[in-house]
Length: 631
Image (tube, rainbow, N blue to C red; front, top):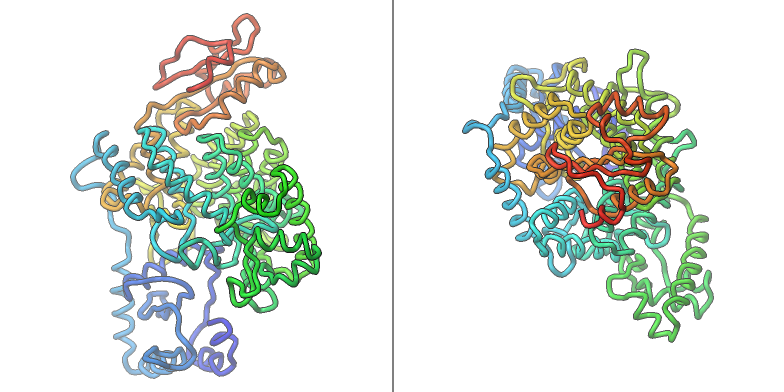
């Protein structure tokens, strides 16, 4: 519609003559997007973008839809006809529009969320987890992985839930669904095999043809999923994909100031995917005939193509092992060869016109990338990742807070703006939690705790439970939305739930634990019938059911025994566990203030010592790192 309607002078004249035209960036103002998307869904039974809404001067909507051509055609009303008729009717049927807007505004007000039949018991919550697993199982694509039909979205939090379901119940099928999906996505064209990183979604069922847009949040959440899968299985492939995602993000999506940009467009030179697709001739011109043939065979680059006459590199029908055998090359040599060839193709691609980069820096999405980098820093023992996460966190606290301490949501061209939403607080608090467990700098835990308490003060619905999307200090809109659905992004309410549970365990704060319990109760009635739509909320349910564990490792930071103990714990997939380092020396005061219960957990005879506590009861301390295996 941008090209068809909103850049058209004839449409502009009609709009300017009778309307006030407002364009909303849904990434900058997700609160407005949430409200008016719910309007469109209520009025038409469906939603999507572009979103077109007509409303009264009081912001009360009376007409909504998604795509409209400029002029009516094939039974579809055109924007010119809609605008002309509304303008005519406004003069003599104005009251009808106003009444309709008031009715719609009333219909989208949030309803109480608390379950009418009372708070869910332990068995109710376990049934919810099992029901979600069955629903995912019924939707699973056994041939290509993923869930449902095309278009296919990655939804990494679904995979995170299934990993936990496998861990808790020993359900091999849950793990198999995760592995099939992660490997199929990597092998498909949705993954950029030349420059790394994932595109937004696949337009087909086998992950071949993506919508080529790359989003920061998708890559953060997918990196987390691949990192956890590596912990759970030990497979090097998952570690490699996670690291390649970070190679892309740190190379192409990081601002000089340390924050991360939002997205890269699908188009370059006005053509979707042009930057990413190839012909055999182009490849062979760069690599030569023999190497070019190897590369084309491996990545499915053919004369007929797989996308509008050209080819999206993919590994769906080939593996490096098969091609190595076909060309009589030893596996190790083949890996070195293809790495060298890929770098040559990447260098050539860099000379093409790049897709437009959306250089907004969003607090919420940066919080997700901080979480992903910090988690990977701990699991892979990669300090460069924790350093990048720390720089991004420092950027946000320097540039995206007002003088009164209020967090802000967006930064661009030196301008911070817009009071932060629930997602900003919850996602950043998550990132800081991961950054604490990667570095054990107590200040990150303190900041996560402070942000969470600010979140409670600004967003909590004290009557019905849960958190509103916009703060109590935000501008007044026609509704105050409260989201729990975990779609492309997990909801702020779901992330807040997991944060509250982890912080309660890390600090021993009973009030946080009580708030988490209220959070579960507030949404259980909504979630219980179709839990597959609430995967991240289910991570919180999983954590709350326990048994949860604290592992406290005491000793000197530079002690090889401490380092080995931390590595032994971090290698394992322990989603029900928080890790605290109790250091010796001056650093001890900061963490003891935040987690006073660790004061008694000291090194034994000067040796690195681990205390494993389950449901607040501690086992005998251990000084042998081997005793931390198989937790």
